[in-house]
Length: 458
Image (tube, rainbow, N blue to C red):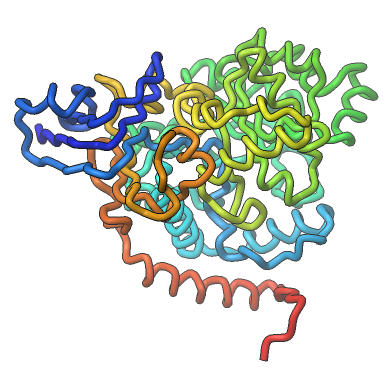
């Protein structure tokens, strides 16, 4: 078993139960797990096959991104102007994806994972948007990250023209993916049930999928924006708001992650809290799409009720930048201004959302999200000898407000180094981006889409 020691760290931000920050810290990694965490002096006598001098570095757990569509968006990043209405935008996105080949999805998935891992994200949840699941798994095998994935299914006709199956067939497709691929790549892959949304799935399908994940000790996630049209529909059909109807049919619970959760009322928040249901928010994407985050989101109330909340970036064609730290920063800032209260969402809380709380929302906090003995060796080393880090008087606020992926020096997953000296070692990044440029050009030509650029290009 290989043993690696990281020593002389300026700070280790452990995110353990005491939220210890260790000055002049060290970690000992045995195989794929952390064996010891403490002061450099205390671990000085521990033998190791490899020693990493972390002088001038801040060490953190690998970041957790709870909602990011990997498989298509890089090919259309920047294509749609900000004023594209949703009824045009979403069908266009999925029309382009429908034209993608398996090789194209492999390349877009690998590039998305490269962008995420390079900037410090080690655990990624893709909410089932890939057409070619094997291609996404192959990309994960190369990138070395931890991946939660699945196949999104629906049994209702929908405005985005996502293929609809009958409920039994949709449930079979989703559960077959769990049975075939859960645990792939040495356990780094988790496969969940992923109905696209509760709006586009019948109660029959939702209940069948919940039963399937309960039987398999798996989990499920789905889009639950709680937009006004959804609220109006469930009030009309069931006499109650969407989240309360989901509770009635057994679709909440500790193995359920609701994505976006923008317009909840107090009763819906209480339902999530009492059932142990988790959430993930993607504030940058929601702001760009004008979905009501500033005026309607109840994130502070969710957190106050003890609901575990992860942070996500959403896809590269709406959230655009796939940096989990950026999502943490936006989350901290937007609620302060929206409520006129600077005490809301402090950096310490959003750092939890991007690490240990985010891991708990995904049911993975026993393995990742903090730097503790016995946990997986998923970690990031930040180079603090850069302008954006100085002066470093508070590593917590620095991580959320002024640092970003540019200062990531080293990334490990399972004790394996994926990024070193700021460069991914699992892929030729320049060659990959060149291939993606060609993919984008060909794909847009095949689908007759063209960017609308506000200024002339000579």
